[in-house]
Amino acid sequence: MKFCDITLSYNEASGGIRTYLDEKRKYLMGQTDHEHVLIVPAETDEHIQDDRLSTYHVASPYIPGNAPYRLFWKPGEIAKILNECQPDVIELGSCYISPWAAFQYRKECEKQHGKCLIGGYFHTDAARILVEAPFQRRVSAAVGDWSETLESLGYQFASLLTTGVESYVGATFERCDLKFAASPQQAQRLEEYGVSGKIDVVPLGIDLQLFQPSHRSEELRQQYGIQADEKLLIYGGRLVNEKNVPLLIKAYKKLSHSLKARLLILGEGPLRDELQTMASDLPGVDILPYESDPPRYAALLASADVYVTAGPHETFGLSVIEAQASGLPVVGVDAGALKERVVEGTGYLSPVNDASTFAENIEKAIHHQQELSEQAYSHVVTQYSWTRTFNQLIEIYEKELKTSS
Image 1 (cartoon, helix red, strand yellow):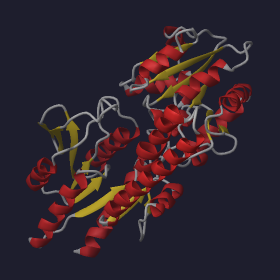
Image 2 (tube, rainbow, N blue to C red):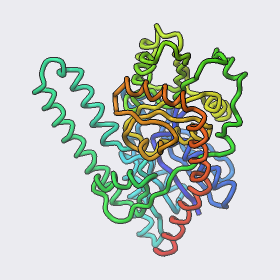
Image 3 (cartoon, rainbow, N blue to C red):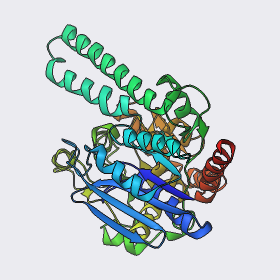
Image 4 (cartoon, helix red, strand yellow):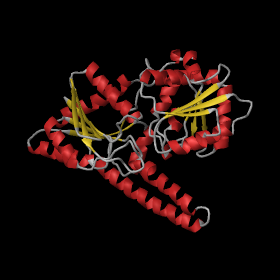
């Protein structure tokens, strides 16, 4: 069988979606005889063949304000690749231009008495993350200080835009043969988009050999200037508004002066300059590039003491379970998927945008670090693995293909 994934979220600085796809390819190569095709936007057109893995780069422009992420803008180019590769299954990780090429390909297959399944995986709550939250921030910044009426009108307009995006994305998912979400909460969110019928919940997984407490390294801590009596707070992810990374620095500034803590932020994105400005007078805060070497990133996690994350719109929170598998308690916000990932006894959740409570929770996590760490590790190792994820996913696809043939 030949599988194909199409997504915008695969580049040198990508996070959870790239991890999901890399692990899927590893699974297909190591545990099946299936083939895989990956179609992603890039600077130039390129085709890379590696055994049963094909990667197609499609020349595409940057998304304004969101480099290095790019946007497909020529569905015809995707259609050519699909006609050339002839996949049996297409999984959509983005719901903008690319789905229409996939739907047309499926239609052509049906005309020729063939079969192609299309699955939609709800990786990103686009309506809230890419429309509602950014628009509301711009409205508040522009008129919030001097006109509550204009701010209210702006929020109402943001709500209308959000509803439009929900309708569009929902209609795209409705055209898919199979619909997937990473958690029950996100399956419910898809229903709010107007998606009907069965939604299969397929949780993401984790490489339990890569992420584990045993990789803690005092030598690595010393390389980053972390003293033996200092507590290291760490965040790894995109530096974008929807992750609310500035709150981490605001909370850090509110920590007790007696607490010896450092904050390490790893990632790339449009907020880098703003974050560096915020941290310019804080010697305990370091803003470093995205760590592209998985073993080194895993060792950094294991060598930290608390994982911090403030994004209210997570659809799964893969970075959170990576941190938990590394033995870290998590301090996050009481919203989105973090409500499901950070269960009682593994960390603390604060109200969204509440830097004071976030700082208090950091101090509590440090005070109760040992017991929280043990609970976090136990919680993850018993529930999450990539083998379980892809066994479930492939079984659903294979069953649907047999049923429809």
